[in-house]
Length: 299
Ligand SMILES: [Zn+2]
Image (cartoon, rainbow, N blue to C red; front, side):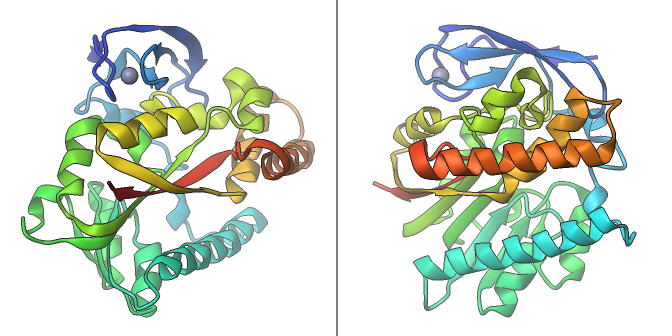
């Protein structure tokens, strides 16, 4: 299996980094991976990592493509209700920045549900989704979806470019960001949502924390590494917003990884407790939510 070993930090290019942790891929391959932590920008990154051509098999699970499944189990109904709610919330968030509506490029748009809702709300929407199956579904929702950013017209610019839980999956981190920013208007906003390795649930579950999700997650951000990312690309963080549902979702998976033989119901009960503790401590204390949405703008 071709693993690529990084000799420089994928965010700031520093050669100074230390071993950080060993984490198991609990969901698909059951293989162990290592992470390193950059001494300069504080980014934790999976290293070595499967290269872009060989990572596909780590996504090959019926569950990973799950969210298109049509079963009517209680979990699936709950999932769909939460998805409807979170999509609505995302549309409200972009409306808050551009009340007169505008254009949005969603990078890694998946099956396009968010863009479909944004379009219905009056936005001009474009998606990029490299997975051919998801891409086809997104297009079938009437959302113009490309497979890669180089298919976009060079002169095309957007008011908003969003990456919801996508940045941590991108091998070519720097060049992708650099190229995407060419498509962002001068007064546009870049929205980046990523898991937060300093959240309460991350500290609680340690190596079982589901949002490590190695090797699919190549980067493990915290607030200071996003701050460094902003500086690298001449951006500034305008605000840092909570994504409170992620604490529950991540905790349910983490309980399952930590206690595989315990009853599912008990795991869900424990997960709801930890998820709400995580949100409570973030809201009262330090804004260290399970996942954070960063709103960035050009300097
Ligand atoms: Zn670095």
